[in-house]
Length: 456
Image (cartoon, rainbow, N blue to C red; front, top):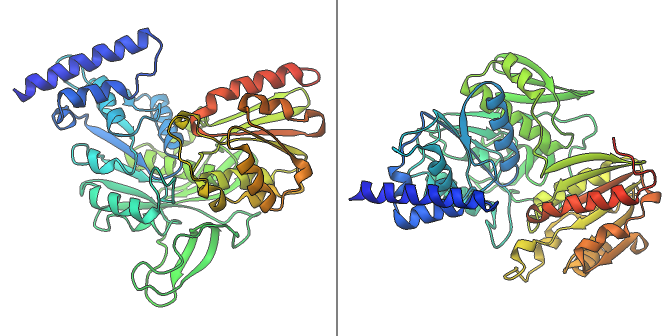
């Protein structure tokens, strides 16, 4: 009877997925939800490919998942992946719907899965990744994953014993996961322009998780990311197997267990360096050689919905995803903006429009976010758009931003119209994860109104 239910669910989900595609609707979640409703143990019964590679953690999952998928595809592997980012239980089930044929047999030997860290307790009992990256663990939105220790406990009790972990040696929270599992670590060396300690609002690990004594940060990159040791016991950051050494022009220099690796640099911000190093570690642990990894990076980039650059007339326009309600992710992007030389204009559109009907009424995350990075002399204008625009304006003024630099509108689509393009060299568009589709409208407006209108 259970197999009858499984195949009923499989055929229904495949049919539903096909219907959604014909209607040009996003089919990344609902077919799996249907399959699980018809067959609650759908994941348990689904045939698994020979190799499953998993990616989880607070920030960077989608970027890393897509880079790994692109790298392996470019290396000749046939794989299935949830690259659209539907990483909770329904999305994972949808991926398994697409991964098998009508007889229930896997179509390919390889699957690359982005896995939501909170949903891992529902997924890992049935899906055992051969390799699992945990990028980092930060506090997240109060309505999503909340504090990093809460998510740590979920992952720590859920990760399969057979899974080899690829962990961030510079994150003393996630680096402690599943201590009995096989593991390798990745790290990013201090870069020439970095200070030894960043003044962030949030620091989630000031005390030793084992003895409670104060931790000493030998190098604090941001928040709790850096190199640390306990003032009382032997707890310390682990040595890294994969290290990002430096950038020289457009080339990245890394150290791996096989020796040096030189490849194209993907992205310029510190989180980009961590993402590239994590991808390198996954590809090497999966079996690609250093030469193969270097070659695939020539044709791999950050997914366009997360990162775009375009020259329009005399200005450079940069789109960056700034995950709303996540103070760490937004702080990282704001840090990069504040450091950019020249005359910068910033459009902040950080309200989660997907949540418009049931949005969280608290704006406490604004006060965990380092808006202070935007009080830079390099920023000549900040435009805020959306229903919570005045909340952001208040936070900007508390951060020391000159009110004369701030413009705002409650109509988000009008925000781009307030940018004084004649006064800047660079325009940053910072949009929430769930409203990046509107970035195309921003780009179109700028193309039509910037003097010259020429694109390059």
